[in-house]
Length: 409
Image 1 (cartoon, rainbow, N blue to C red):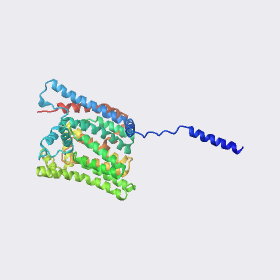
Image 2 (cartoon, rainbow, N blue to C red):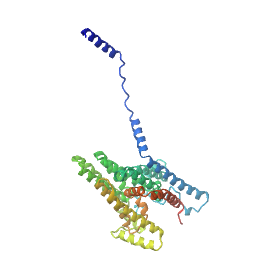
Image 3 (cartoon, rainbow, N blue to C red):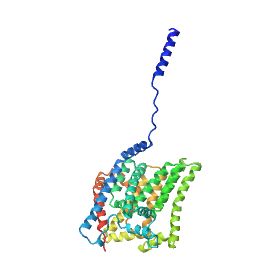
Image 4 (tube, rainbow, N blue to C red):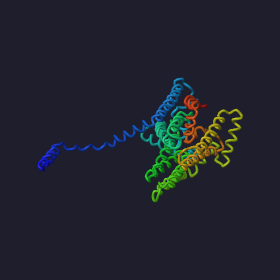
């Protein structure tokens, strides 16, 4: 090969490169499209949970407003029924919004009344604000419930547990003027942020935990779960040096939120513990002996033929058994498992400490391990799974209807 031939080929290659079109700059990816793609992927991933939310809420709202419409068109005595959106708790929150706190209504914690007051300030009725907030929070909380549960029982059982939670007989409380959905969303959001383990996420977890504490009394118990997550991250080395300060700050936010509320009550009513003392009008007195008295009274009533107390008793015992099973068999990190178990036990004991076993199925809605383990049990007992899918929605529809028409005097 001659040197001239090699030079000719080099010149030809350079000419070909020079004549090739210049590469066009690629447009920067649209942040909105990335977020939209991630959201679509998330919804597709957890589609059964979103579907359970949608179908259960259709059932609740159709039966609730249908029962109310029937009462209106039939001319029923107004003293024998209530509007579905109002429920039995709405008047209490409305009283706080309208008149402010006093020694009688101080048992209502301020987060939901704050949302209602904000809605009224821009012309939205308080009942509508409460319902919208409750349903949105339930959608978020239900998905968060399933995502967290996957860590302990696996995705299929966690999804099944979320479905059971959505159609549970007392799950209509997640769609009305009440605080169940708010607390579920705060618990799920706070835990998911804490699990990220960054300083910023821990501060966000603390903010949501403070909101949980201002939602209803059991909200402060979320600190037990956050403490367990922090201990686990310390032991695995995820929290080191200055990053430890963020979980500490998150933990302080819970008592700080409660202290702020109690100081406000002090200035407003003259009694910093008005939220506790206001329970006296319902003959609820917290004591160490309360759980023993509650069980004794429930057993006597159930033996005497009270079906309501029998249901309360079964729900309480079943919830305790589910927590024991969770502690013994959950596959997650041991400190987190312990934290959720203690959270569940405390959530059961807090209402029982009043000495009365009252609405325990409703309180159990906010103890996630109970429904995670129910989902696991449904996977092992096909007949139970089918029975729940049939009986729970029927019972839910009945409870919704009686929430409207079950008023006397």
